[in-house]
Length: 271
Image (cartoon, rainbow, N blue to C red; front, side, top):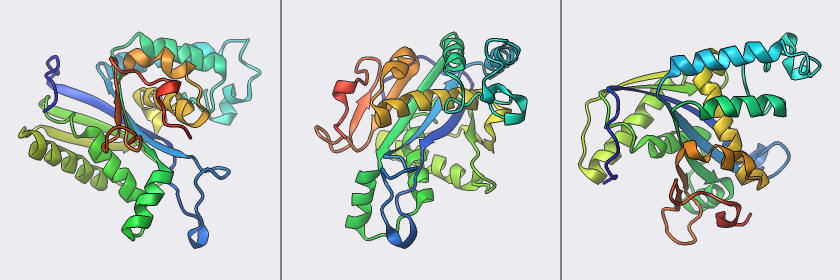
C-alpha cells in the first residue's frame, strides 16, 4: 500500500497531457518508431495543481507582458496571427526566452507532477509476442489507469481535465480508464473510495494548467528523446513520481524516479 502522505484537500484538480505520440505502425504494418516525425517514447503525465485560478492569473499576466515586450516582438511565434504564444503557451513552439519565464512562474506555485513513460520499441515487442492487434487508444487508456491508480482515493472529489487532441470526444473512455485504475488500487491495497470523478477534455488554450503540464512533459521528453537534462533538473522539485515502465534492468515493473531517487542521464537505459 502507498505510504501515507499529507492530507489532501477535499477537492483535487488534475490536468493531464501527453508528450510524443502513440504511433508505432504506418501503412502495411511498417514500424515507424524513431523514423522522421515519430517519437521513440510516449509519455503521459498529469499535474496536481493546488490553486488553478492563481496559476491562470499569473500565466495570463505573463503572456500579456511578453506579447508587448519589444525584445520579443520580432519572433514569429509571438505574433497574434500565428496563434501560438500570443494565444497559449506551448513549450515546443515558444521561444527560449518565453520558456525561461514560464518555468519561473511554475516554480512559484504548489504543483506536483507525475508521469508514466513507455518505450515504443518495447511496446512493439509486446505486440509481436501477444499477437494482438495494436491500438493507440488502448495504449493510452492503459497508461491513464496506471498513471492515476494511486491518486484517486484521498480526496472527496476529483476534477480531471485532459488536453483534447483532434475533434473526437473520448471523455467516456477516459472515465472508464480512471475507474479501472481505481479498481486496481482497491484490489492491490484494499483501499476503497466513493470520491466523485469529474472528467473533462478540453483544449489547452482554455486552461493555463494544461499549458503548465505541457511544459513539464516537454522537459521530461527532452531528457528521454534528446538526452538533454537541464530542463528537467531545473523543475525537478515539482516532480513527485516518474514511472519508466520499460526500464526493466532491475525490476520487471520498471523503475520509479522521485525526490529521493531523481532521474539523471546516467540512470536512464541506453537508447
